[in-house]
Length: 310
Image 1: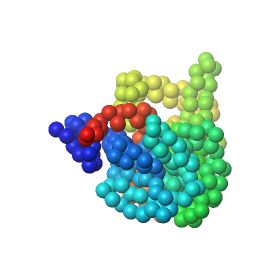
Image 2: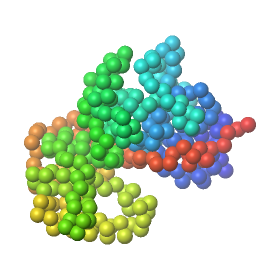
Image 3: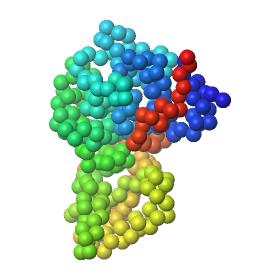
Image 4: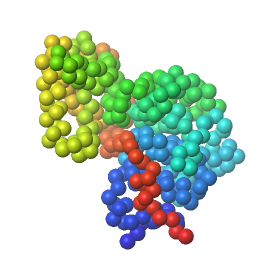
């Protein structure tokens, strides 16, 4: 049994159904690359090819066309008119926008938390990038559409947020009015053991951990062993005089907003600014059901699911 990915491209129904939403989307991107070999991918499609966070299955594949071309949606492919102010790179023979330009596009036209996640990922992918470079790239674009919106996400970007969950959590923490934490702080015990915290509010001694399901899905070993190591690590941290609490949150906690708020309040953290209801409401509405995944080995696994019609 085969499922039609797009005209001329098919995949095994069994394998297709087994794909996660983000891998299914990546397969669609590769399918378009097969039938449109000259396509230049952008937005979520470039992000998928780069291994940047993908939130659920965006379904629509995004490509760039010349300024004189037509911006339209046709058979699941959305064409965007673009000038010559984007850097185009090549990966495995596929043309796409650079990490910086992909992040700027998403920061301009998607939810601010998605834009922040993309910008953080771009800084992790390209060590030569900085938030200042991203911000300058946004300002230099010929089109002003989305420029002001993108500033918020790009000027807060950091490579020290290691996952999309951390990036989204930092957005929610700010919108709840809590102070920003230090990121990826290493604690050394007297025996030399090193433990790292995703977030630290140093003045209060609160360590925060953004725990995605991927920690317990088997890729890092047996889930029970992972939990045991985490328990021992937390116990070492709590024994320290400079740590008063170790708290954990997951995707549902962050995107449902209230659970993360209660976790931080329960640890003793207090807001220093008013809540921002609008972005918090939009996080609940737009992100809670669209868990992200940062792809590791993306190109071959998805491409192998596809077969082109002769």
